[in-house]
View (spheres, rainbow, N blue to C red):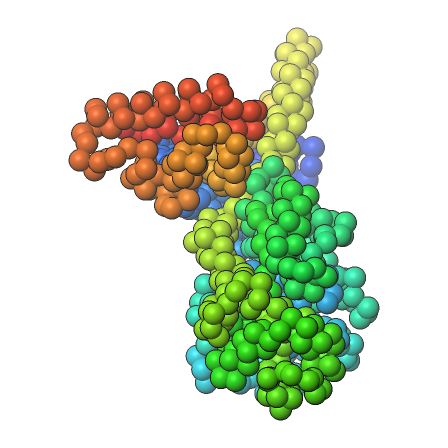
Amino acid sequence: MRNEKNIAHKGIKDTKENEFYLYPLCPLCPATSLIVQKRQSTHNFYDNRNFMNTESFHSLFGVYAELLPRILGGHYLTQKLVPRVQQGLILNESPFTVAVVGQMRVGKSSLLNALVGADLAVTGVNETTATVNWFKYAAEENCDKFRVIWKNRPEEEFPRSEIHKWIGNSTLAAETQQLEFFANAPFLKNAYIVDTPGTRAVIESHEETIQDFITRLHGDKADAVIYVLMPIARQTDSELLKLFEQNSRIPGAAPYNSLAVIHKWETIEANDPHREVLSKVEIIRQNLKDQIADAIPVSAPLGWAAEHFCLEPFWNTSFELGCQPESIISKLLLTDKYFESEIKDCSVSVERRNLIRQNYRLPWASLKFIINRVALDKIKSPEQLQETILNISGIKQLREILNKRFFSRSKMIRQFSVLSKTLPACNEAAVALRNHKITYNKLQEDAEEAAAESTKQNLPQSITNYIQETKNIVQNDLKNANNTLNELDQLVQPIKDIFNTMNNDTKFIDQLDNLDQYSWSKEWKIKLAYLFGQSGTELNERISLLVTDWDSLDKENRIISIENALTEINKYRREVNKESQKILTHAHERLEQIINQLEE
């Protein structure tokens, strides 16, 4: 037993170029040891890194992902965190996922269908989505089935015709973890889309399902969120967005991965619902500015109609109805029953009106909006009406925003999400190691005092040996803890720095509208958006609007041109308010980074 202790305390000398160590554990704990692979030094891994482009960040992230588990495994205190960070790092390999969430009856499923351009999600007047439904890209021959991931049994596939069995408060829905649907829709090549049950639902367990999706059970699967809400935001909207923020973003990060969609706005009681919703969107954007990247009004029914309904009869008939005298239109649109009845002097027959009501799935409020739009916008043809409704619907704008904010940045957003799940473990490890060093520094002092006392009092050799062994264990452990902490700091701090810089790019792009009050800002707003990487993160893309003929300039003249831009920005920094000063200060820092990069 004594020999085993000696082996454990003394450790095994390293062999094969220090490939492995046998690290002793705390002398106050059972005498067990841990074999771990010797860590490569993180020194110089980040030398000459370029903070300007996302590829630099991806390279930096690659080093972080490769070394972090090994570094944390280098000390017994931090080894327990390795499975946790490995679970977070695995997320980087899975497909980018956008969740469509919101309260019940806001039209999430119809929005998903219009967005994807395929009739995938089940819609209806009653509550239909009772499960978490995943929509994935597949070849045409695989699209007539759906897959059931059961809670307590192997997965199965069923024909699409049987989906009605999972609608609402069904027994099958209660036994299902998630459903997977497949479509040959180009939109789904960019990401998985997830349709979720509504919050505040009357169906049992809906509330728990969406809360779990956003947080513990499924929170690791949603990289970005489309939050669907009615034209008036509720307190619970803000609360749910905060849950997503806490589980998908590093504290203090810009809300780069959540977008609010104000849906069903054509139901607003107003002469022009579209004009009315634009003012409401601005209020919602301000109220939720810390939790969403943007807010946009979208009508899925209008978008679906514009992209899928035929010119004849739907758009021709709708245009002709909109051209009726105002007195007739007011009667036609009083109720859907009046619409389908005989009305004197109406040139559109009851049969034609019934045809578009029966053959084209469209809410009554949406049809009313389309017909009223003819007079409001002085529409001249059915084709113009169709194009106007498509533009007003916001569905094209939503796709563009998703491409710009989510899909074009999907790799970066995914890596930001991984950081949000692994950096807390790094912080926890750093705190544990620093506290451990404090404790073991005191132990080392005590061991040195005990060694001195044993010599002075001429204690038995066995006691002197034990004190010396304990002193060596403490010293070795302190050295190991110190090395682990140093390597962890050297690994984590650079990626935090570049994350903060890129996060500020994202944040200040969204705040450029703050410059609108200044006469010089229109031109500079576009220049700064480019500088912050809106149209590409490579150096020539960022600088293209600030410096003309960039490619033809030599290094010295490039630096002079950037210094001139710095002078201009500094001049404007004295004229702006506090919020705008932050934007220009970030621009100043970015330009200085470019100069430093050119001077290397």
